[in-house]
Length: 580
Ligand code: PEP
Ligand code: MG
Image (tube, protein in one colour):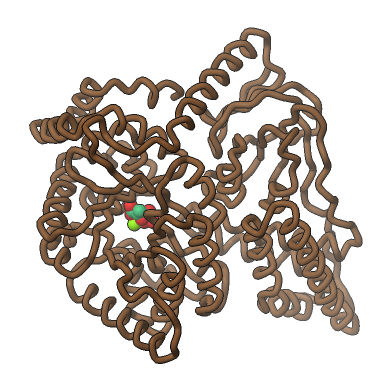
């Protein structure tokens, strides 16, 4: 028996036979070429890219038939990477200046991309390199004459292990027989992980050595809740895991029964629990977990890994897919929150000494009004199809709101002039993530229809704790009295002005915090789809009156540790804690 520990990428527990799938690199050698072969090598490259494009288009139409339009977003991302001019120009340049063969040059281009991506702080963006790798791997295979293996079909209770596993691979697995996946590389925010969660397939990532052919056929336990893998388990371990699996499934099953129950407290107070999403594929999972729409649609993904910003039509198409995925519920679209650690093409990270306090989010959008209005027009246009709300990130003062609303009005006028439909009453909100916005909350509330608190950033800026610095993670405290006082102030300002108070940071998905957030008066919480039913469970066991008392009680303590202890003693967290 061997135990491995990795990243819990998608929850669920599964047992089965391990099948190693080799999606690994094509063997490529680099060799010098004479000057007269430069043209030939360049045309081989161009031809291989074209062949790969045709192959991907075919795969896309096949998947559209079998998995539905919803899931082909990943193939489209790969097509976008593939047809990016730079892939050809940069690689041709390497062929010419390095006088080497096309395969060698392509590997060098890939290495350059890897170096660039490795410097990105944001883990989500950093992991996008896996899409580039998958695409270049396909081109290399095409050049080498190796066909991309169709995905093998599996019989029986199979757990797939692979060095890497692309989203396209994910979409081709046979869901009747494949119970979980394990990969050697990748992380929680990789496309593959997002898709695994959207498909409810348990996944553990980052298990080095698991794709060793020696393991093929052995019995394995995958625990996507704890992030562990046990190869060749002994009888006791198997029995314990089986009980844990049964318990997990029982809890899930019980929770799923509550999907259609009203999201109300025992004393009849209702609260919206919505989902946070980044791609249209996640919409189904939000609804499947009883979410009443999307409280935070992070649009950054659409702007990444590309030279030019997406045009209005392209944005409209994706926003529409998202809207359709969650119709008839509302969709809250956050305008571009790039900059800081989420770099776009052409942004020079070294140009800012302190990117977290630099040109990011709304500041960036306001610095490029032409691009910003494209996004606003696309959002407005999708508002003609169903309820949509617009949300501006990282607002620090009134000027930003005035200017953003001015541009929104211009976008509306432009659409009206062109006779294009939109919802003229579309709601506008701001994210409260900067202490200045907390202090100005009463003024901001007069200008917008709702607040949405981004606690991930609000905690980082209030406590001066970098949210991605693992060494300071013990100081990143959602229950810090300064944070709780800020939350109270935000809700009071919102309600004082008659607008809605929402919260969409990670804090929303933690069941322990529900009574505090409910008691403080939040009207809506938005979280990862997988948390919705757990939070709802606690909500349905609380009365508003008791939650208000609990929230009030938190203010009698002076440290986060005391508040946490107090909360734990107040709440019977039976179901929420039962699996962790
Ligand atoms: C937040 O800051 O809490 C938030 C929801 O935004 P993001 O995590 O995208 O910065
Ligand atoms: Mg934020």
